[in-house]
Length: 253
Image 1 (cartoon, one colour):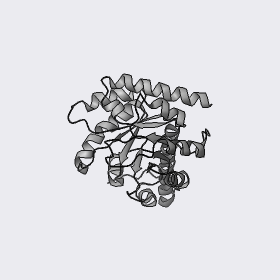
Image 2 (cartoon, one colour; image 1 turned 120 degrees about the vertical axis):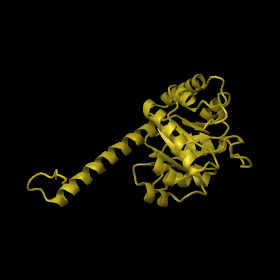
Image 3 (tube, helix red, strand yellow; image 1 turned 45 degrees about the vertical axis):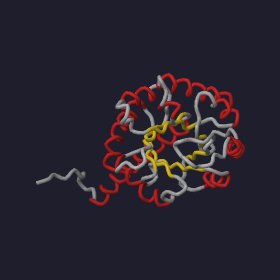
Image 4 (tube, one colour; image 1 turned 90 degrees about the horizontal axis):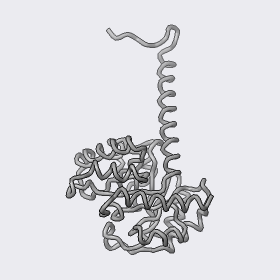
């Protein structure tokens, strides 16, 4: 026979409500912590599962220990079960390094993996539908490729951050025109240096050689891929990018 843990004189409904309130409070606290980490984030990495290199745990430890704040598994065409296996490795590394884990496109996978972030492209699940599935505790990001899309993402309810680009053509998105740094300048002009504005990241072909141009255009957060995934020393490359981004952000304060 199970033993009730309800205090004498406490109605079962009241106890259940108390548990619900405690759970809601915990979820709210977790959500607030993730949003603060997003506000502080500067360097966002998208990477595949590194099946060719076979060094996923080591690679993640190297970049997360050296300044990557958010990491997303982006491996198009991967079945959900395999993606979840790899995401477990990502989640372990993010937990140890205090980083945010992002899932690309799929709300079901984000829910199953317990990710901090779901990133949605313009043609993906609408934000209200993703919110209905995931609740308020998961951060939602958007991709934007034009001034109109960036303006919409700045105001769209349920969006926590957005990415703007590509700054340069990239093999990650073959055939997609690059709006270039003009879109970065537009977004920077709309948001200014107000720390309370919705976080946004420049994306698309950014590396150590052209980061200065991106910073000059007004971005203070970037998404990178090959700058780290193809680096001879991913940890050192991450540390250098992160340092430059944080130095630029400090100048604005």
